[in-house]
Amino acid sequence: MVAGVIAGQVFKAVWKHAAPGDQEDAPKALESEYGMRQVLVAAAVQGAIFAVVKAATTRGGARAFQRATGEWPGD
Image (cartoon, rainbow, N blue to C red; front, side, top):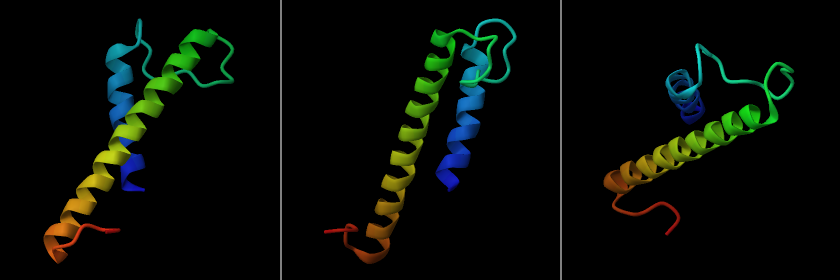
């Protein structure tokens, strides 16, 4: 859950800097004023950021578990 919140904040910051014009929020799929390309790019960027943040938090948790117990989780 924490990874989702972090990913959402990272995506908003990235989108604010990368979006053309003064677009603050990413386009949603049902907003008719945006083209298909804009909506798909926003979704792809959001998905990539979520996957990276999730992997980083999961990996960090596994390393913390290993430091605490001496074993890698799942081994």
